[in-house]
Length: 132
Image 1: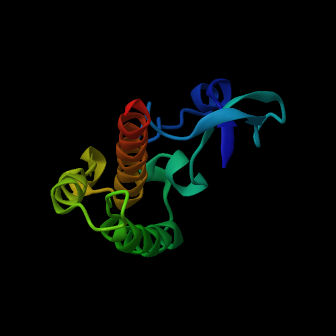
Image 2 (image 1 turned 45 degrees about the vertical axis):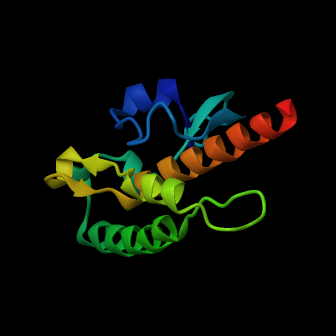
């Protein structure tokens, strides 16, 4: 779901768990239909947890399970393609805990964070290689 900061504030929605490191960019807000700088975040996690229905809770469990699988599958490899064990273990240690869920791991936010870290490692390796 794409939504702008103005609509987030008006509706009383939460900031994304990965704020300020989540996906953000120019787009058309799905709430006010204006072209603005928008947050890109699943619609389920936008609304407060206190307003969730039983269906939303079940959907959350299935989404969290899916992103748990994806987050655990992320690795960091050397340029040759071999697994970099040290960096991969550091990547796996990065988690986002949700205070609203009694410090449970938020696997969607963890996956997005690990993707950013993976991209950062990849870019750093490219810069190091280009300097040589």
